[in-house]
Image (cartoon, rainbow, N blue to C red; front, side):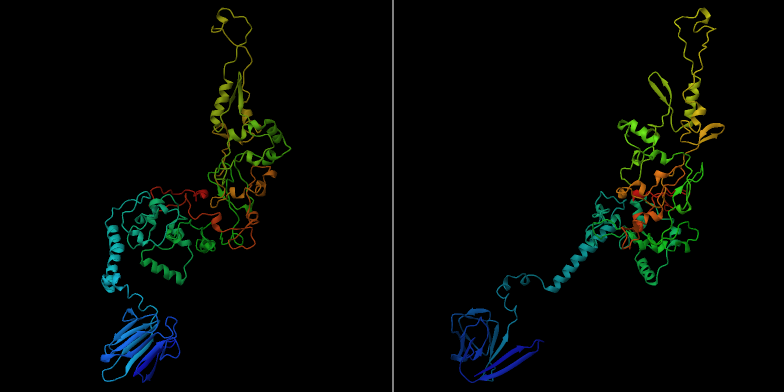
Length: 586
């Protein structure tokens, strides 16, 4: 007699047990439906095996076909089992457990589906590492200890015991295994410090501080003096104030610190320019916090930006230039007389002279801007005008001729020029050669010798040189200094826009006359600079949609001013100095 118990599972995992009794001596098991136990599995034959009683209360299990079966982990075609001890047969995906209670005559046969992974590793179990290694718990604790030792204890100890030296990009760091703490690759500018973490992270578990940055970047200037920055900074909201309070607990310096803008470990990229909003946070309403500022409020180049204020000299002999709005139509007093219109007129006398000089002198055509204004190598600015290089081809300084040699006045030093002219006027007169010698004491060297030739004067007299049309007065304004003839000092600012920059190389597709109306300028006092309106024809704010060139503040302005205020304890701190922005060095 057999008690057949079938165990199935629902989708939720609940077991369903079905039982039935078969009052017969033997069982046929297979895939065919007429079998006593039907197993719908292609791995099972139509009639796979037979179970029947044997002597001694045992059961004989024998394969009917050519395929065997697995019993207790062994594959056989025939087996004898004692049902009181139990056995487990595997056919395909089904497991048949055979048992018999001592107080019953029925043989129990429980059928269930084997898990997909069950039995796969039985044959390899004797060769697996798990049979020789310690238990999982012991190994877990061992790995934790190894990780703490290698990546915490060793880096911490080597960091605390290292020699404190000045950061050196060419030298590898002393801390061992500190790269495991890196949050990511460094930027291109700091890529050489990849293996020298302590160059920036001087103290363990303390944020990078400004004093560490200044170890290498000592020459960089502040945006403004620290107290001025603090007063001009916009107040923080409640959430931002809370974030800064939490950051302060971990040693992070407050707003305005280097790490506020310069974040690292974000990959080998260049630092992105500051957003327009970063500048607008303070400059949109700067005058409400810094009531004495001369800077106008600005938040968007296309919508809210003050008129340009170039630094120009408005008076002769003025010591420092003044920043004046172009909207006030300022006049420049440089001490020079230079009409651009005359020099750029294609039909004028200057054009004819340039053509006559020819290509050998660097001309050959009517003058253009490029004949005098030479771009710098970076094409951002222009080289200073040089008299000998740019002007002397037309404006000669020759004042005498000796044989075939022309003597030239020294430009740039009025005292030396006057000395040369006076020396020329006092030079001995050339002798009158008649072919006859004078007798006795009237001969050359005699006590009565005298040269009655006409007085010799230089081609350029002092009065003529400084006259309005003279060799000097043609371009310079004459003056009297300490009773001596002189010229007005030339006052030309090194940069007109001291708080901004302009990249001429980026605008090389434009003509000079697009921004500089030099062709109609008759006076050297004309300020030939483009105003805000002309720039807005192409440039609008960062978020402008229809602008030809959406422009953020960083396109023309730099946050750091190399010549600006330095920290109070900086050894090279300069006081009471006008800060000029070397924009092209940023």
